[in-house]
Length: 322
Image (cartoon, helix red, strand yellow):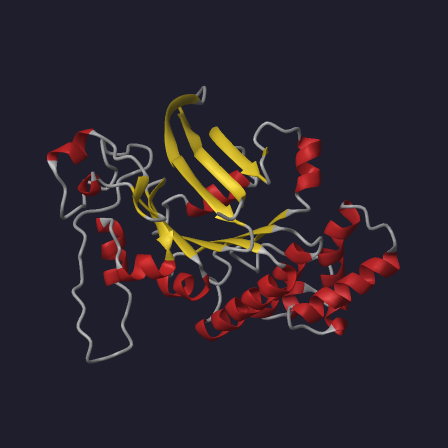
């Protein structure tokens, strides 16, 4: 068995709901509720689910960009939830993030050179010449030219800005990169270029990706394993081939039935889910999916199913497999 570079155990992130004159706590939004998974070195783990299911919050909480409410995150066997801010700052060199919106994640007042060289300076590269050389090398790695270093973000297209974001994430040779929907804000033609670039960089730098997306075809293209989230929890996790050929969870089956097929002669049964996604501030009792599940049983309304292995490397949280 390969050793996991990242292990997430029972991660929770709740946001308080406050109101009234004194800002009293009225309740909480369970954005991430009891999520567990691991990522092996050199692997791309895709995480999918509809908007608001807690994918991005999971990614930010395990990097401690937002502090988790509870749970454990082991990076190279060190629990990073309990370490000091100073120790975490040193670890940031190895754990990076590529943000969703390349328009918002780059400082418009800084040149590309300053944007990419800032993490180098923070982590101890004092020589200006060395930083300039590294910036030039990174720009060429992501498909831009060395002379782009003196320009500002507004002079680039969306795809080029995302390349700058990728170069910034790569600056200090990280081991793990959380990709928070890195292609969802881009044109379809540009998406494939960025995905191919990310695969090329993984092979060159021996990177590990946690790839968050809501587009199942994007995840199928790039991932080794795929986890499916619903209402703050993980409902299914397995290899991409297994997931696309034999989805176990009713929610995964419904998601996959909505993916368009390129072959006009092939027929596909579309599973239409009833009702709306429940609110994470007031999730249903038992299985969070039972209010919309076509196969719901009485036990689903009362007992939350355990997320466990039902086949080799195939984990599902569903009473159908107990």
